[in-house]
Length: 238
Image (cartoon, rainbow, N blue to C red; front, side, top):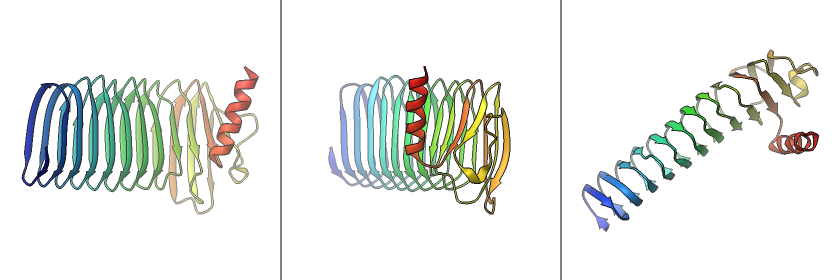
């Protein structure tokens, strides 16, 4: 359906749902297939399973629940809340915040103005250009953050943490139990022998980074080019 002025509620067991240019609240419940909502004037709530969910140009908040599928969200003015076990998740261009609960599949988030709060298990979290504070609590989940704009707290286990292009002034506390901390930022003065715990600061130290993992490397890198160069050399060493 398209150009529907008021709120819309759709319940669909099997099949595809496409809605565009909805003036009010959108609610979709669906079991198998695809859900596509574009240009929603208010909130969008999707409860799905085994579904490919795409939401774009939403003026209000988004709430999504999907399992064993995929979720793509872009250009949302409100906050986004996702529960998405065994779903590949892509989020881009959010004005609000992102809260997500993940298991087993990766999340990629790009250009988010608000804060990000993620709980993840056996996932893979990559966040680029997040302006608000970041909190990631994970197990067996690698985390990569590029150009974070505010405070960061990452706790994971058995997987690496990469923080690329940090702020010009920050304080860091990085700890990897039976792992190591490394950096190519000369101003940070991380010892060459790659300690398991490092605390230091650069510039005015107003932004705080707290990074914790185990049996893996925490890297604080100047640019993504240095990250890929380092990965290439690691691959050659193996």
